[in-house]
Amino acid sequence: MTENTPQKKFRYLTRYKDVLLQCISCGDCREAIDISVNPPKWGVCPVKDHTPGFEPYFGRGKMQIIRSVWQEKLNLSQEMAEVFYQCPTCNACSEACAYEFDNASIYEALRAELVKEGFQLQSHAEMNRAMIQLMNPYNRDNKLKGEWLNNLEFPVKNANEEKVEVLYFVGCTAALTPEIRAVAINTAIVLNKLHVNFGVLGKEEVCCGSVAMRTGDQKAFNTVAQKNIEIFEETGIKKIITSCAGCYRTLKIDYAESLEELDIEVLHSIEFIADIIKKKETKLKDLGISTTYHDPCHTGRHIGLYEEPRELVKKISNLIEMKTIKNNAKCCGAGGGVKKAFPELSLEVAKARVQEAEDTNADYLVSICPFCFRNLQDAIDNLNSDLIMIDLMELVNKALEKND
Ligand code: SF4
Ligand code: SF4
Image (cartoon, rainbow, N blue to C red; front, side, top):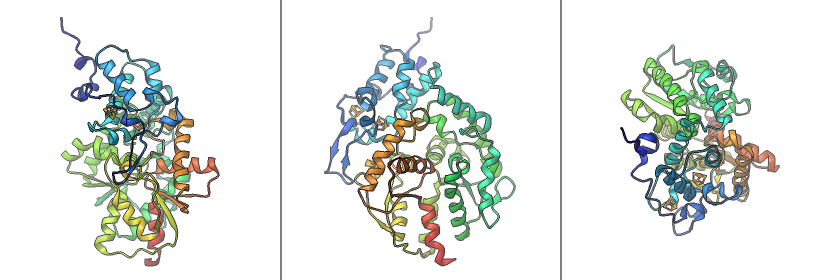
């Protein structure tokens, strides 16, 4: 008889088998403060204060649960799922951990085990089903993904039909959320102003699968990832840029192996244009406004894109930093499927971030992710805040105006 070892039973956790038993339960991943580091760390887990706050709601408890599951002392369950999904996988706990575990990836592996055993949250199951059937998780007709292009005064190439140097992968949130289409519109205008030979996939763009990956639905993720890889291969593209932090992390890290084989480079659109602006010495107008910058977790802690956005923000405005920034920045609370399954928690986390932004007295709250934009805007509205939420590409577009 074949022995059913944890390695065989837990196919996703197995990837992390070498670290699953190493957590020493120090608790630094809860609320450690360290002002000797730069930037200083002012607390860690953003959901701790907005949930019952005990062990499973922050890193240490999650690691204890995972260890017990791995040791087969605890069974996967719906109750476990309810707690485990109240985490935006911001990975701030990883920054606090002396062992440098990639905590969010370990939590995602546990989520994948939960989904495999039928403990997926219903709202996530519906979202991921829509993603497979309609190619977007918003349950919308994918044809609408091309609508924002009607706002442009110049034609944009269809990367499926014409050879382009750069594929602008818009992402479902900016393409399908009317209030956030400005992210896509401004990105296209800036690329056009900088004479970039780019194209989009429009209504044929397939969700990158971030929502499925983050919520542990590996089957759904693999379905869309495979479609995307085929599309990228057919277009012969060698450079993909995206204005969404979630797509960026997913394409750059979760697709890494496949895209490496196809020799495709992935960049955030801000990283891409910052380089062009620097090389061409393009002039940017100082807009005479004060701003503060929110680091999306997926561009920040997950990848380390901190300086390029700041360089641009500083060129065009007076940047006033928040108390928590860069690797120690507080999350907006939208990611990891939290906004979908626990909208109140997501809003509370976003409100705390907006209050941090308000403390700077800046006029604008700037970010480089449509999903952060959406959640922070909801918090601004809820708080009746005077802050103006804006995507950095919109500011860059305004700052380029004098060069038109
Ligand atoms: S995950 Fe790291 S920081 Fe958190 S309790 Fe374990 S060892 Fe400590
Ligand atoms: S990933 Fe973020 S929200 Fe989740 S437990 Fe870690 S610090 Fe808390």
